[in-house]
Amino acid sequence: TAEALVWTQARGDNRQSLESDPTFGEYKGSNVIMVQMEAFQNFMIGKSIGGQEITPNLNKLVKESAYFSQFYHQTAQGRTSDADFLSNCSLQPMMSGSVFIQYANHQYNCMPGTLKNNGYTTAAFHAYEGGFWNRNTMYANIGYDTFYSKKNYQIDEPIGWSLGDTSFFRQSSDIIAQQQQPFYSFLITLSSHYPFTIQDSEKKLNVGELDGTLMGDYLQAIHYVDASLGTFIERLKAEGLWDNTIVAMYGDHDNSIRDWSLFEKFLGQPLSDLQREMILKQVPFIVHLPDGKYAGTHTNVGGQLDVTPTILHLLGISTADMTLLGQPLITSQPQSKLVVQRNGAFTDGTVYYMPSGDAVAENGKCWNIAANALGDVGKCLGAVEDARTELSMSDQIVQHDLIASFRAAAVEASADGGDATAANTN
Ligand code: GP9
Image (cartoon, rainbow, N blue to C red; front, side, top):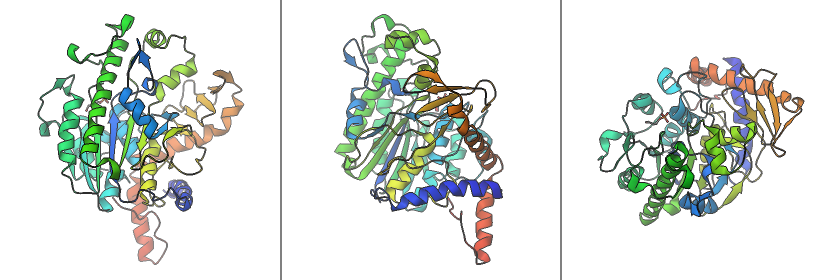
């Protein structure tokens, strides 16, 4: 416990050192809307097929927002639930299974609970069975006041597993607009779930030779979701929320297509192992700020672990004493950092390490990203131990409920008149 506390406190100290940056608290009191987009990969941004833009609405939003072009999902077997845990709770997922299912009753410093403690109305929105991924239990534990699941929606636009995203956003907006401010609303889309079955009438793209393939269907589904997001943004503007709300969006994980010939056909080029990894792991992260500040492409590297520290930093809520693994990505001088994958792969934005076999073994491959070429493995080995430590510390914190122990120790220390570090509670 003591070793994990010292390790996690060092990350808190780093975040605390950034509290003197002018970005800390720049959007204090803003509402927060965060959209987790199903299977939305970064390689969709800015792309066209047959002269038609696939994501015209997000392409426009990207220009008006802080857009992170080197941002990675860090999910494992827990897929959508891992993305949610990483992004809202800033801890690594399990090597196998899902924290939402295995450790739903443990204590965490997740964003909904933190915002609730700071006077926010907190709600999660997802038009599927509330018990899926054990969300009913997990969401109550991590601080959502309300979870609007399938039973709260009229299924008036059936698509794929459940309700189409256009209706999902419309019905969610009806609720969001009525919420007491400030609020945190977390929405999870669904219409672009594998195998991307949307109605023919909603397939608006001419995908040419990809017609009838999984990739063709993926492009159609992403185009549909992009249009849904466009209507959602218009609605937020009409409700007067656009100018007092931080709107963040990120893709949860890859699209599960494993036939690389389909990617190569779409992109019109053969892909190296590194390029395949980038396509699989990179998702867009877009943060629209109320005044449109910090708009443009940000090339500093980041991952889903950094989402909650980024938002809380902008709101001026100190995370110095919280057990969070990530760092704020929007600061006046972006820091270099390591993005660690559950399988032991990692990147600092210049090199990408791919382990072979066992997680974080030292016999992996070290890619030079700019050169798209294998480089000297020695360029990566210095960080292998850091990646290994991050994964094992996170596992200990989650599996042994160490945040509860840190809190108990802090309470005891403060009763003894000592320094009450790690005293934050959800
Ligand atoms: C269902 C949705 C899909 O609620 O979250 O989860 P996934 O299969 O992508 O993990």
